[in-house]
Length: 174
Image (cartoon, rainbow, N blue to C red; front, side, top):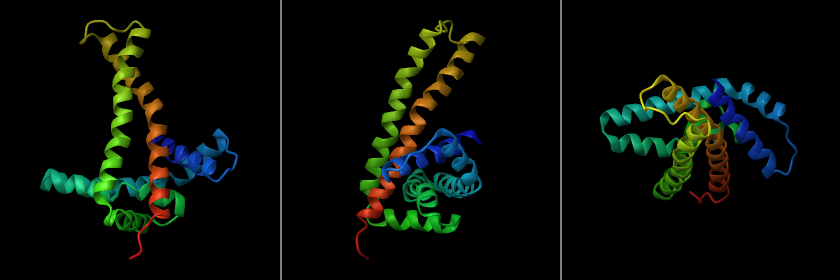
C-alpha cells in the first residue's frame, strides 16, 4: 500500500513542480491515497502481463515491461482510466522502444547502484555489520533496504513522470 501511495505522491510533487505550483507533503499524500486503487489496478495488470511474458520467455517479459512502463504516469498525469492508461503507454513507446528501454535501464540502474552503495554504509552507521546470518544483521539489512528504497523511490517516480511528459511532448505524428 505505502509503496504505491509513495510513488503516486512523488509523481504528484514532480507534476506540481513542473507546473510551477506549490505542494505540501499532506497534499501529496492525499493525492497518493486518492489515486491508490487505480495505480494498483494499472500496476497489477502490467505486472501480470510482464510475468506472463517472462514465463513465455524472458524477451517478451522485457518487451512488455518497457511498453507498460509509462502506464502509471499516464494514469496520474492525464487522469485516464486503467485500460486507457495501459494503451497510452503502449502507444507512446511503440516507435521508440529501444530508446525507452535505454532510458529505463539507466533510470532504474542508477537508483539500484545508489541503494547497493548505501546499504553497507547504513549497516556500518548503525553498527550492524556483524555476522552475515545473525538476527541483528538480517534486521539491519531489512532496515538498510527500507532506507535505501526511501532514498531511491522518489528518484524513480520523478524520473518516470519526466520521461512520460517528455515523450508526450515529443510524440511523433502517426
